[in-house]
Length: 141
Length: 80
Image 1 (cartoon, rainbow over the protein chains, first blue to last red):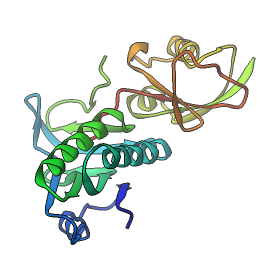
Image 2 (cartoon, rainbow over the protein chains, first blue to last red):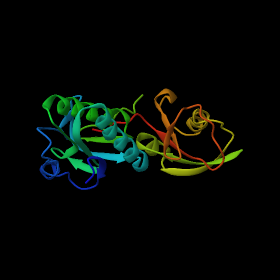
Image 3 (tube, chains in turn red, green):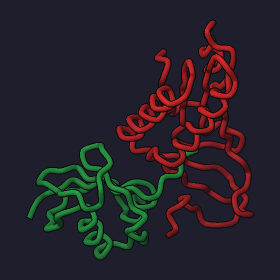
């Protein structure tokens, strides 16, 4: 796999396999982030959620984000995977892994990557609730 | 008039009731196209929150629209 890679996955994300594939003898640090589906949002009981993406642009944006992190921070590799389709409570929605020679760059790059994914990758989330109509997050404006 | 291929995502797709359509328009920019569509359908999203792409690249709301362009209308993104 490429050192800097972003992908979308219709299947469950296997975080431990992704982490294991990051091993590199030049890396002294690994920092990972996992986003999980939680059972509530704004006091609403969440049953499940659905992600959809503008695939061509999401892949382009996501790849640009991990590559920019490689240029900006002293890291060895960075990979991120975002789940698509229908997810249940506890499922992994997003995975980010960064390796670096030292911990500081790994922490900072990992946070920057997940923040930028949330801000700039065209992915949308529909939440379905137990006692209320579904909502598209961020679209009631 | 030009013909554009419109793709809707997320809440906009749901509110429009379809994901794609071909449309004849006199709009000269994505912003004008969105204004036209928002008059015709209950898209219910303030234009200030909509992002646009033409041919799979983000563009400014005032970018020029040309005949045959593939225009994507995107609500605020919500990944993660």
